[in-house]
Image (cartoon, rainbow, N blue to C red):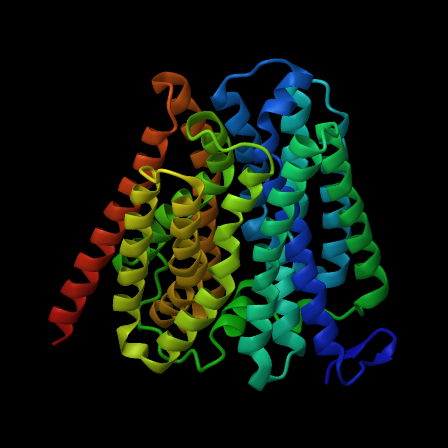
Length: 417
């Protein structure tokens, strides 16, 4: 058992670590999901904005977040998780407070970038610390619990924003300050609950791989380049997967209100259906891919095509009930289900000596789409007057990425035969 600056760690310290980072993801996703349901109220306060200008709020956050993906692993390795997490979440807190106090769209943009930069340190720190402290036999369960925080946070953020602002008519800043309070409490929890350990035992992206895929990593193929075609197709597929997902997170609430007549607290309830089935979906398909390791490519293709169909069909849903059913299916078969399988597939393809760099590049591609999707969709709405075409674009990109991945995967198997 690793030791800390204050002596030996408690026997069940790993459980505290898992709880800590589950709550960390919950707090992050409360922020990520709370603004999109209340775009109209924000505009009523700061003045009317174009849809592309509103979509840029999410893009600014994800720009800051993406910017920190590669350096955050280095920072964790150099200074240790706790020494990186606490300053990062303080920046996150300050960014959210800036948004609450903003009197213009520019102030909200600034706060969103700061919030993204602050959150950017969490991924490497969370998974390196779980890999460092969680017993090998518990890593799969621990990862599932940590990941479930994103679903929990999405449910809380969507529904709390809809309830407080749309139903109870509180100012939109109230929800933002609630988020800031949660972040502040999380910082205090980091201070008192986590022990200071050096980052060398875990490593950022490498540890995240071991958390998702605790088996031996010896199966990576021989070549050393992180830009081999097999990996490039994985990066591209993850870009399209994340594009469709963050398009939904950023714009579906506004789309439901403006074009489907669903309003008030129902918006958050309907959209949060995605999160309800995301955790069991991720657990089921991760377990299936572990049992059928040679079929990972087929599992990925099945999940991506299912997501494409569900996104397209959602545009024709006649009412909130049918849309909720579609979103429940998307939660079970969509991004959160394919994530652990695709990460495992990438680890299999990566050179052992460059797993950290490979996964860092993989996550960078995925998060880059979160910068593009919200602003581009807002621009499409401004140009066409409807969000439908933005969702169709997301579905089309997902299909294109899946087909290229499938064709290359099939060609590789034929060549190896």
